[in-house]
Length: 166
Image (cartoon, rainbow, N blue to C red):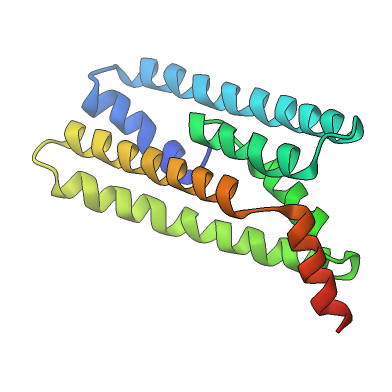
C-alpha cells in the first residue's frame, strides 16, 4: 500500500463510510498499510543495495524491482531516489533530487483534491472511495509498466553525462 497523502487522508474515511468500520477499527486498519510500507521501504532498499553490490544490472535493481513493487502496491520512493542519484552527475544530484521531490509533492496537493471530487460525484460515498482507490491502483500500475519499458539508468546516465560534458 502506498503511504501518500491520498491514503492517509481518505483511507480512514473509506474504512468508516465505505466499509462500515468504527472509527477505532479504522485507525487500527490504517496502521496495517503504514507498517507494510515501512517494512517494504527498509527491506526493499536493503535488497536493492545488496543486489547492486553483487553485480546485478542497475536496470534490474533500480527500475524493474521498484516498478514491480509499485505494480503490486509497495512503497518505492527510496529506490526512485537511488535511481535519480545514479543517473545524475554528482554536481547536479542535490538539485535534481530537490526538483524530483518537489514534483512528487504536487501529488500531495492534487491527489486528495481529486479524490474528494470523485467521492463527491459518486452516488454513494463508499462507491466514490472505492472508485478513487481503483483509479490510484490503475495509475500506479500503468506508471510501473511504463518505467519497466522506458527507463534504463545506464543508458540515461550516458545521455545525461554526455549532454553535461558537451
